[in-house]
Image 1 (cartoon, rainbow, N blue to C red):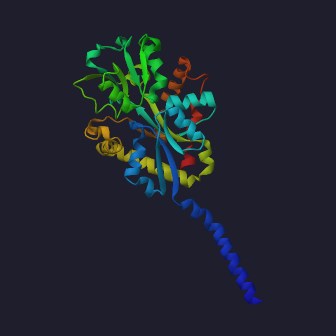
Image 2: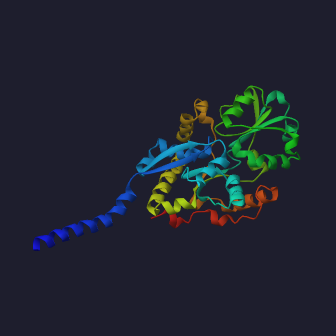
Length: 321
């Protein structure tokens, strides 16, 4: 009888230990995460975290999916097809207004005039000396800037109907410009650094000059469902990995540029000339600039109602142990 009781006690103790340890074991297992990226410098923290094994060191197994269309990328994230992504602020705010779904943001990307990340590249033979000369010309732009084209043209007294517009990927735009299929293209790094300046001229800092200064360009975040499906410790690992990536970009920007060259071969030989935006951690995000942008998008009709941007941002406690 004593032996039976001893066995029962041992079994119960083992079960109790299992109940206590199982959640910790599960929490510390490598976590597969699917990242939605675009082909601009906005995705650089993801790329550095992969290349420098920062994800792996924080027990994250990354899978990168590249999107040309930011609206589709954000739709897929809320549909559960990806977990974390980088998106233009206009896409995020527009999605809030039209779909009622709010991205939970914990990192942002800002353009500043001191380091122009975007340019209007124009063929030298196009006779475009100033932006108003775009009237009647062929202008290309990438999907990540689609929400801002009408706003830019409005700032110079033009309408979309006044310009022959073409939407294409960053790489396609560069090729079309070289082939003479466009007169000008609105480009974002790393599509800027490979430009052949023998054939094209550039007007820098279009976004900060005509739209918002500084310009809240992109945000990195996840859906509210991600908060429910992950533990705070798992989200902490994600934040640590990307914060470390930003630290490395800030401390060694030349190495960050070389990372761009490895992922985007068309700029491999010239990526040292690439200009990087400011990557902002959660506590560094320029929230007033984002509220200003939201108000401007409302005036332009890109969003249909006033947006309270305060509820977009992740609470620090949700990303820390």
